[in-house]
Image 1 (tube, helix red, strand yellow):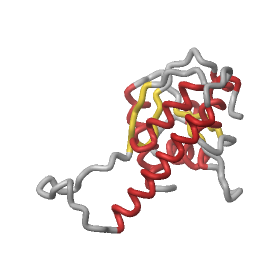
Image 2 (cartoon, helix red, strand yellow; image 1 turned 60 degrees about the vertical axis):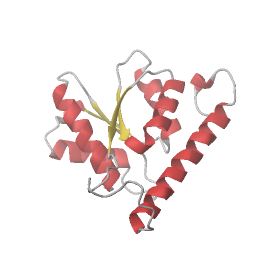
Image 3 (cartoon, one colour; image 1 turned 90 degrees about the horizontal axis):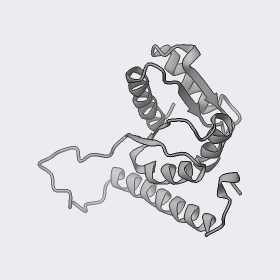
Length: 162
């Protein structure tokens, strides 16, 4: 399980414990044809004390867009949804879930924080961490641009991904 997946799972379990009637939905397939991410997440959730009866898997979605429409197709639009994803990814995730007809409550996880308050946020000295973060930012900017271009003013996006 990746660091990001673990952070999202922990936040999801925290929220699950605050809402007695909640269900925990794990999503994501496996690009390598191994165990889908959804199954790994729910197995870990059960190991961390979540009732198996409260876990649901959605193993078919392969990206945020297909995940949003798969959720709506399976559970409908009249659900209260708390969307747990990485803080950096939240804007694009909200975009797709809203396109799918939902109005989720955002619950960001895996925040990037300045590790030392004594250090200036304007330190532009190169580092491996900054290169990694730059790659993630670029991925999100391109993904959001693609999502907005793909929507392109077409009506009927709620029918599913195209």
